[in-house]
Image 1 (cartoon, rainbow, N blue to C red):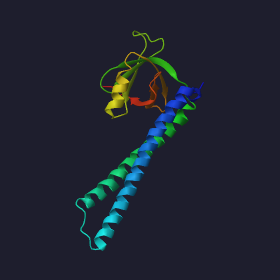
Image 2: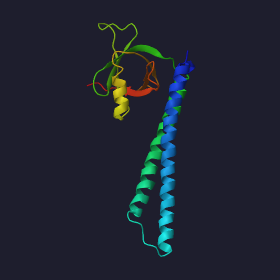
Image 3: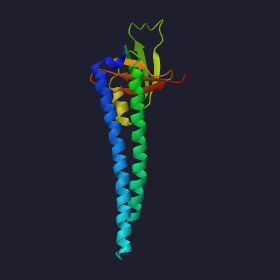
Length: 172
């Protein structure tokens, strides 16, 4: 059964997409505000008024910052779409999560035997501290995981409210 058939998975992916769209919309609004503020400053100075202090800096910060935030949001939205497509064809596998380092994860498949089986070694893709800590709190928990590509995996747990992306950890 594909993972996307699970109602909780659909809810988790919807939350992920909503967050991405918030970033995208926030960036677009910031760029629009920067553009409007720039037009207002030009209008004020053209009418002979004094240039507001720090107006140029604010225009640049809004425009550049908004553009960066919009690109991040677009990337997150595209990643959520790619993950949704992958979960429409891949089933969830069950296992136990072990934390091997700050962003290093080890997933032991159901029926794991330390002597004969090899655990899946992953590195969390997120750089957000709060997401890393949320995954660290799942240490020892039963998780569901699915392969998105040969290098990329998704995992979630009951009550997580989202899916987490991870890449295969390189061997050292």
